[in-house]
Length: 472
Image 1 (cartoon, rainbow, N blue to C red):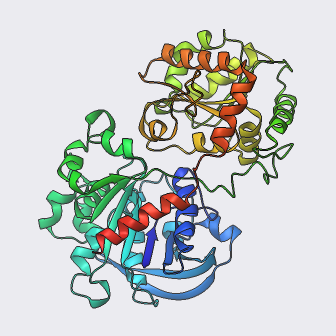
Image 2 (image 1 turned 90 degrees about the vertical axis):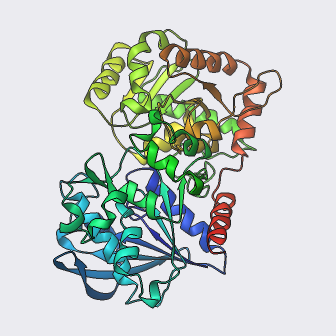
């Protein structure tokens, strides 16, 4: 099968969040099938140019409404995946996101991908789109490439990694940038603005989300960020496939950043990492006290507003708290304040640091994720790989990947709470801290989660089945 992934980021080239992890792992898992040929198209950002040196393929022009714009095409092969980079210094000689012209930048990217197919020996059967940055590809296929033989029969899959980000633009964007006729306006206009996610949902052959529960949640207004009517109109083509993680990358046996490598057979060496983490962060060395960690963006929908409401109750528990992440200033300031107010008990690391993240996953006993919404979440899966037990709110992918621990039957993989309430979160942490004192049971659950099937091979097979079903 010939599969083309379009994405705004993919590890190891560029990553700002979970999308980068997924695009680094899923294509590689599909490429293990010798019957698949897998391509990934990415923008050639300045950060990629500074770190990688892909081979030049060709140059061509991209028609974008009244514009005729240069594109350079570069290629690099990793793990049997062919990565193609779209070069344009004006659009991509900067960071990934956060600019006023992001709509135009990624509309250009989408059109440049389709134009590139004329210059390479590849006719995709499936184009797999990811988030709003690639949402205009189905629209372009239907309006600009319909009738061209090489583009006939291409099927599209659109994956919503987070419906909060929708790619909105002014109404005149339809003609001025996309170069699309008025007959398509109803399919792409939402609340008076052009909406890339709406366009992709309406015009793709299938729509997926990164967990089964999130696929159900976004049918409701609480989670859909205004697109619930569009989702429900297209519910017949919606499904959810939960993410996996790269178990070679996230591996406590080979992680070069941690103090003492360990495996499920040598789980007691996790304690060496806990001791090293305490020394590194200036936490008190107290026996029988669990470390509860948060590795997260410090923003409201990640549950930081719950923490803001009940931190005094939470810190009455006999635990130590470690935080790693950046985000809204009010939350960053709160954690800095707590570190100063609770020396030896709280460590606030206001940074993004992959080495520090590994050290925390390896050294902590529990990982707290009190999210208001969580399409899938990767941190809980990484924590499980390191034998760190998740404490999560039952939403989205957290519900699908973390089952409640039954203390008597020793079933489950973590501690959960249902309602978005700070005191329920505190109760879940309290239950986890109490469970920590039962060392035999603790080790049993650690063993369970470290041996859980959370890699990409089984999840990639579900995507393969989806593609085959579309092509029937």
